Length: 397
Image (cartoon, rainbow, N blue to C red; front, side):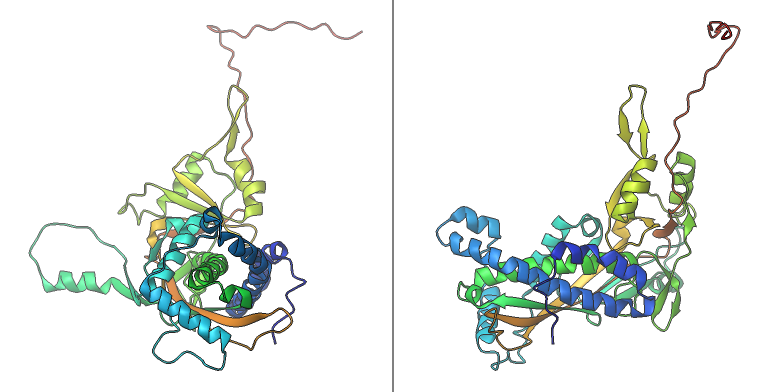
């Protein structure tokens, strides 16, 4: 039995996500994320379905409204899929066959991926592999290059550093509600609505997985130690305490990403909780110049990204392009009968994928609970060559 989501507020639900992650033990986090995802998906569908339907009806005679809905010219494969899906939703007892017609076309998944990159700063800077890729190959570069004879030992050494990440075994599920009236409008409208809802749901799941996933039933997060694994769970990296963002401090942090000087680092990302960004990071990276104007900057090219799934006091610094994420497939199936009260159908979407850092040195875990803003200081130098003129003030009577 699904929860009564009509009384839920979408913004309040989104805001609760960081607290859920912070208060949930690591061994229970996968279930917590799954439950949150299901509730979020149904809440989004409930709140957006009527608005989408109103715009959809308007778009029948308005090209601008069609553009706002993000309607696409579907491929033949997409038309077949969504036509079959619509028939299944209208007749839940006639489930889709085992001919894999319940699997989203690759073009639709890749469009969802592009939507995710547009809406998420984090997902836009990492490597997201195209749909249909069942195994991501990642390599951990180590050692120094050089000239010499081609030998088997060298080949073996290189091969030993390459590993495959199976993107078909970890699954995120979401329950969605689809209005009957929307089904009657056609394949393009159903595709746009389903894609919109799944994009918003996957945004939270993939961001949290890429940042802090424990690797068991979720991706391996950037904050995880690839050398410490117990019962399929990767331990969190030891946090480095950071109290300021001065060039000396920041440079030492970034140097840890260079693999002991064997890798050049040209740009980094800094992930932080939205509240921590406003209360700690933004003040720590803001200075006032001689003209009295405020300037926000860091002493090294950095993209600061706010991630709602990060707990307070925690930040992650690393090389964004050194994280690989893949969504191999998304499937759809009817979950329940028509919900007569709301005249809508309930269906279940399952997204299969996985993610991992390329190596153990690409990201570091930070404790920024004590991060403070810099104190502007003015130094007055009084020398014989350039004396500071002073005026004697008589003592008060």
